[in-house]
Amino acid sequence: MSDQATVILTAPGPKLEAAVAAAFPAARVLDCLHAMPIGRFEGRVWCFVDWLLPETSGLEMCRRLRDLPATAHSHITMVLEEDDSDARRRAVRAGADDYLLGPLTAETLIERLQRYRATSAGGKPPARLTHGDLALDLAAHQVRWRGKPIPLRPNEFRLFVHFVEHPDQVFSRASLIATLGKECQAIDERTVDVWVGRLRRALRAHGAPDPLRTVRSMGYVLDGIEEEGWKQAG
Image: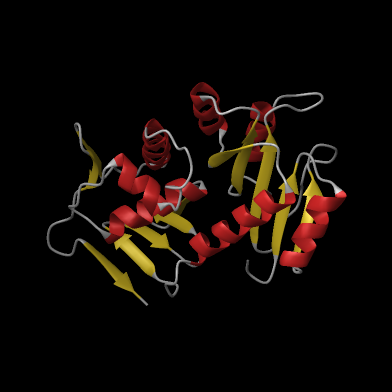
């Protein structure tokens, strides 16, 4: 994990907090069940939301976190009670980026955080990608359409970066799951349709065109732009 990060839990405890402190000394742990996060956090924000909560549902908590400026673009993991395909789909629709089968132990938490850190690091220097009038700032984790920012969740942003880096290539749902580093999880391939749908709606809502094309029985492709197309600048 980078120098600073925030881990938000709905069921924190001494073991979980001690594990995070030992593995990531610069990270802090917050309890969102008793105090919703406000303000601005330094570094990445990772949320782990339990499916069942004392006074609300995990789905509702997920929606609340997405509505708050402090956590709107955080990575949210839903901790499921059982491995149920309907629950997985509902979690993603409520705003979760992925999910795991509970209970959340210290070992599972640290393993996930280490995986997220490795995936977000990416091994690439900060860069700026463009596709027509769409600009993707990898360092700021932001997409802009003609200078206007388009808020995207982590999965949708990473998918869009992947598409822009590889125009005119059809990607299956399974390959897109692997691109996001989630091939080891029980991710329903239809979850990719939810991610792509969110990406498309976000672009259209801000006046940008939808450059993605659905290829029936195969997956999705971003059609390249004639002449300049896309380019990468330092």
